[in-house]
Image 1 (cartoon, rainbow, N blue to C red):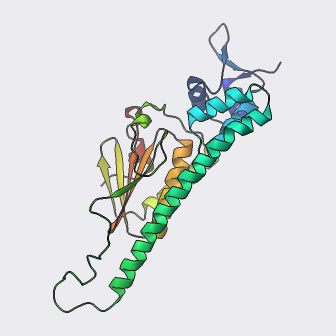
Image 2: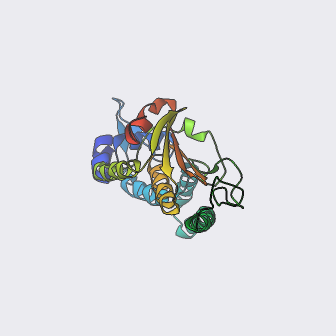
Length: 259
């Protein structure tokens, strides 16, 4: 029977040792202990990690993945598929909801852009000048929240505060993701500290909103301890990034210096 020490499993699977410990604590990856207290993983650990990684790319929550692993242990593929189907259907519905929200915002922006492209009236702004377009969203931001237990628009949960700090990306992927954030952060007009994290303010633009939302969703998928809230307003975009106290300083390091 093949067994792996944590360093061996990390090298074999490409999964950081910190993530392996996190998966064990979350009940996703069982480990035995040697008399000396070292972790020892069974021969099915590599395949189990591949399943976890695949499930995470679908946007499934850790609790859902743990349940799927329990079903998978029964050795009946049909049972796993039967459980996955409604979960994937839920992710589709959530994703479609986010897309619809961004499309509606894009349509609103297009209308404002068309109005502002016309000739400006003489003198000061007035009710019909287009600077305060009719039908604009109600005052205040419309949030789209990406969090460990609720990826639906308008939701805000504190579950991220209890998520262990761990990242599932390897060295190369981590470097690529960091570069993606640096490129995006460079487009921000302002960076500032907020409670538990950082706020990035971007110029208004539906295309940029989609880019920010896509990258935030990808990041939350590999680093579940982050909580992202994207605020869409008629005048701009705001991305709030928060992290638990145990990860204090991480948002500022990854998402740029504060201003």
